[in-house]
Figure (cartoon, one colour):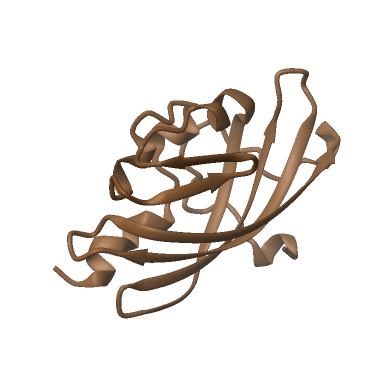
Length: 141
């Protein structure tokens, strides 16, 4: 199996993530991989607090580049918190994969800001983004 075969699906949002599950999201990471999500540091596969905060999450992620066992993506996502405040985040991530296809390193830079409900751009039904939905460039992101 090629690196592209192993990792190509990784640029799509996992379905449990889109349903606010999160429980299966981190099965793509090695057990030893340290991660940081905002003010949380964790190791391994558990991190549910993010999904308790980021509700009705919509993500567009696009491949930027890849070589060998490394891949770079750029993305934007929208969500609201439990008070109903909407946010949009933009980011870039660099991933490195182990021979078994699990992510062993992740470096991310993410910026987010509050938006109004009227400023939302990602309005497809909760779940995977439809194939014919505009990409990041179509929104000028």
